[in-house]
Image (cartoon, rainbow, N blue to C red; front, side, top):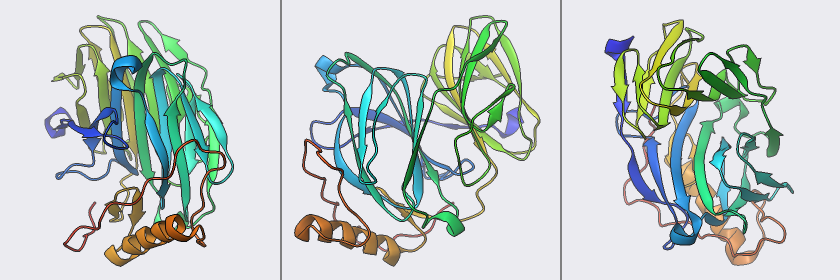
Amino acid sequence: MAGDMELLTPRDVPLGGVRAMTVRRTLPQRQRTLIGAWCFVDHYGPDPVEREGGMVVPPHPHTGLQTVSWLFTGEIEHRDSAGHHARVRPGEVNLMTAGRGISHSEYSTPGTTLLHGAQLWLALPDGDRQVDPDFEHYAPEPVDGPGWEARVFLGSLLGSTSPVRTYSPLLGAEIRLRAGTSLSVAVDPAFEHGVLLDSGGLLVEGKPLSPHELAYLPAGAGAIELEATEDVLLLLLGGTPFGEQIVMWWNFIGREHDEVAGYRAQWQRLLETGEDDRFSLPADDPLPPLPAPVLPNARMVRRG
């Protein structure tokens, strides 16, 4: 498996507007769109909020996906148009199902001084992507062993199983390793995996992974070998190969250019007229919603 490992390096992207915080994006990339159903990996911090401004993302739409919010440090306030108002806290997953269409906002709370975490998306399979919007919160109990601790927020790993609903077989877990620890993680050989290193010194299948890189491992192996040369914090993501191509643009996932262009038109109609049969706005949000960017000049193509 080590010989097949593919390294994905991050690019810096502003999140939410001109004064937005910067995130490190490792998925999607030109050479890889999906790891299982995972289609989007943003990783940020640790950022001092006083200097960086924190997270300020006004209401914006989504279709055809689930968002997974996971924090290491800080707190974020979530509102959505399906009526959910919740806090994202370290070690607790918030999973929002956009389905046929939802809008939401995310703001770091006034008491947050340091913000550090990940924002992840899951593509919904074609047969489920028009489900009604939904929201789940789960605080996994940690599992541990000599030199390691894990929190499994999606799927099953290391004897822990998350009850959070997904629409394809998936895995999501935070793993911490103390320096000098070697851990063989038993995994489903039908899954492909991604190892996102937040911090520390780590060998994956004997190969070094630098902080903020994402290592892609193809399906076929029943274990992933991890060795910490320094204290390590990482996310392990996985799933069965998605088996579908998607069109992903701005905050929408569809299957064709015209479908995604239609979502954009519906969002803009909501902002202009206050009425739409797909989208609405979160109640009592402190900021006005974000307008959609201009569509690309070329037709969007399916990837994956």
